[in-house]
Image (cartoon, rainbow, N blue to C red; front, side, top):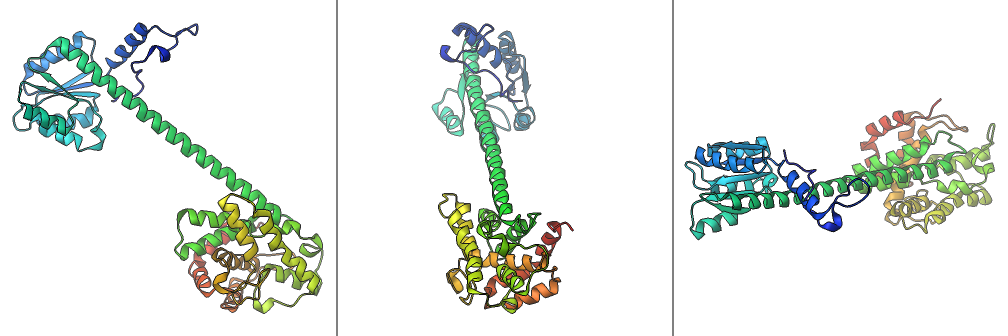
Length: 406
């Protein structure tokens, strides 16, 4: 196995600290680094057993004990895979499979791009060395081997490998830490958004599940329209804040204990935007109060630099607009209505129709679908309504999953 926790050769300024808080001397730090290098696993590949025996002896005398070897060059690549050595000493002139062939095979695999491979060769021609270098040889050792040359070259390539492994491990740990922190921030942001959304719903929806359902319905509709990834995530969270402006609506309009009067019930139906068949003209002062919640919601969010809250502001002010231009507060029509508002409008109306409220029972699904269909081309964009119906199976499952407790 590759030793990734070994201490690399260190400068005096970064030398390890011994007990008492005093840094180790440069000589002591160097000794530790060499000792760690000698724990490395080294693979020796040479078709001549005597050469393998000599290399093993030299390395053993210097304290290298984790040695593996083969005299069969055809086994070399598989041994690298199985043994995962820290360095390879590779003879270049071998029958059947040459050292250059083995070198080329290993370097073609991304796992072994940084594996030190020291070529052992009696060949002195420059062309062979050039080919080995082009294939990624780390160093050369001439035959017959000189022990005084072998030791520093092996130590050097292993030290470089330790530095690479240390940097790679640090990079992986840093990436994992960043991903973890990013996930934590995303969860925190979602919790804040949900709490803010629940604050707007708490007076007339004590479970807060209405906002969850509307967000999920909006996501499912958008997915049917071809939206993907982060765009879906942002819409789902923004749609949960569609009625944030309810914070500024008086309780007398939004909620009343006991049975509602006919006029109050019509006001509540208008607020929920059930559809053309259940929309009536309200007294001007009540209609103005009701319309305020979209404008309040937009103003609450309009100064945010957060993309999600900025999108939530768009949803808040546009989800009561109607396709035919008779909605509020801006009277936008058709494609002029932001698509996020058009999507949330369908999601919000469906949830209002299909949920029990103090002033109404939950409508049956067939009735909900009928009322939505009645709004096609007048209240709703037909393309978005079609996407809703295509996603209706998953929407119903979501409704069951996030249903209000009785």
